[in-house]
Image 1 (spheres, one colour):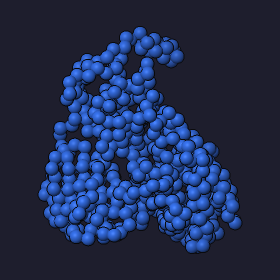
Image 2 (cartoon, helix red, strand yellow):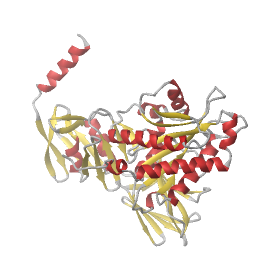
Image 3 (cartoon, one colour):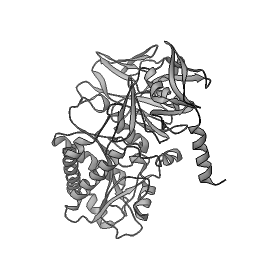
Image 4 (cartoon, helix red, strand yellow):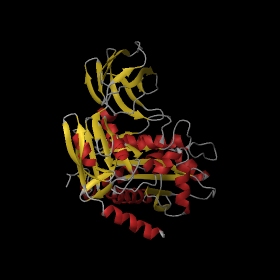
Length: 464
């Protein structure tokens, strides 16, 4: 049998299967949910948990919100963005007779971040909240940017409530400490009650920022002296937010120049200036890393997603075996590279990604509106760089960069010059040229976020 004939046979079999409504057992009694074969209505199941589910027509994607948890998924795709992190699903999400459906395994993957479980049989499914508690450990870790309270053993993103002398983290499921947390420096004590973790802080100490990490999963709270400018997820904002990502860092040095210059140092210097320029223009901006820290590629975009940033820009330096290669080029995400050089650039920048991360770059690029907006953002950045004296225009390109994968906002990666070119490397080291680059990119981002097309880029709409 040919492949085409086999596909037609499967379609015919599915079309001949009568639609049924299966009774799903819930804590409040049985509820009918659309079903066909082994497929269940995913939106209906999510709503039974109390989650708010909305539809973004331009992107064709759904977003489910429950407490501090957020899951985004798109019919026709096999990936979801779970609390800012791109995550593979056991099977595809489909549209069938006006319902968004998936297998029981796919439903479990979408429900689990919400703190709910689907079990039972195909004819008698059961939906109930997770009763088993996560076993966590809490410790204080010194850091150059302030002490860190690390909650190990959880991938959940808690709801944060600040109070005098303490910070309360409300998780979606019960917690259990694996061992007592003894007072350490700024952390005076730790209390756990059901799904609530309370951190008791020393006088004059407050929470500066929070973020999640993976491999292994953990939630991090950065502390600072009271009065320090709030950063990250706790900072309130009324206008657009730009997340600037200094490429590489820590153990990942990136490209190296002929004199030993390191990409990670120059990208951090330029990114710091870029954030300053944006803030001076009245635009909220923050860095994915503030010092020489190691940060996984997928964590950078995940941070921007959690912060609900309006723009994500990753700053890098190029390298080539051809010593005469020079100039700037700007990329936006696509699974297909523009040309061989673009593919090589993506391969080089993706070198530190895990094999799983590399597989995720092949997702369906569901946020179509953001692809168009990312192209416009990249074009605006490249146009401003081209206006600088001595910059060679290498154009706007597309390639499968892991650091751009899963972004739920317009995103671009800019290669500001070639560190492999001795002359360009020397120029990139000078504070004046770094300031010129930062000013040009800041002007481009400012122009973009204040443009009509940026204002029209959809976020989450109402379900049809």
